[in-house]
Length: 99
Length: 99
DNA sequence: ATATCATATTGACAAATATCAATGTATGGA
DNA sequence: TCCATACATTGATATTTGTCAATATGATAT
Image (cartoon, rainbow over all chains, first blue to last red; front, side, top):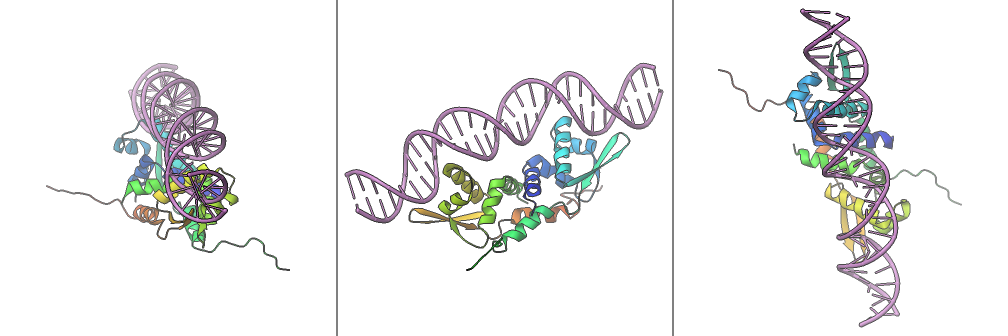
């Protein structure tokens, strides 16, 4: 249970523009310039969001010449899936002792 | 696809103390005072976090006399499950027209 | 009623975040 | 080499967020 990764993933998802970016990447790789066309944010802002999405391992980037191509990372939601699974179990007993 | 609910849920998950609270509620209802004992935050801060968790529909509160009892909400992760499912489909064509 | 306990709300403040303009860094073409 | 393109980084600013002290609310007991 890597709470740090879970928090980082949740933070990455906690912005409407970033969710929109994820939806724009459904099923296809796109370059940053294409994403920029489809959003109403500046180029530095997009770059900032892509960095967060990559660091949260939700997106993978691939450099090709001048272009950066981004695609959804498989298993990107795993940390939150783990959290959800953990919440459906009773609390784990770390240590127990009866005299 | 309620992006607003997804963002609100993600924001609610994007804090280590709140994740800890969720883990403390695994399998059992607890009152705020019990949660307060197990965390290192002030009472107003806990109250603030509980409000966010309730508004994000991750937690349900039940008032009993002076006490507030909190428990995990079932289906709390649904908005993010929907998002994850959506990301595994190709982008939906909202409208298409060929002449 | 008054006191006490559990919790919520308010107000203030520091830290984190989203944003953009300006600038930097590669890359490819003329 | 020089210029244009695509993207990243920096610096500044406004907004949001997490936190606590102080106070308010509401319930129970004396």
